[in-house]
Length: 93
Image (cartoon, rainbow, N blue to C red; front, side, top):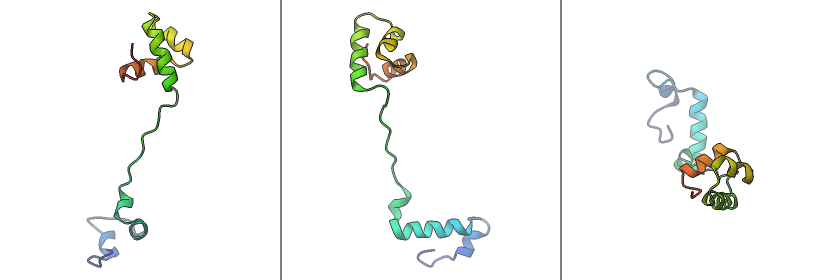
């Protein structure tokens, strides 16, 4: 559409059936942000509960022989959070 090879009315009908408003929004997005604006990467969220300090303390307590549910209670996190951290090797047993 931007290169004038096709008209909006050609894309609105079969076989594409793209709504006119979507075509206009996409055209505006292309003009303002370029092609890269359609392919933004999303940042992964940081761990909010299992901080490095809690992970280190949990590792020390686990090394001392405590079971994971007692360690989680003492550190102040859920037992499931600790189990998941152990599975992804964020806490060394």
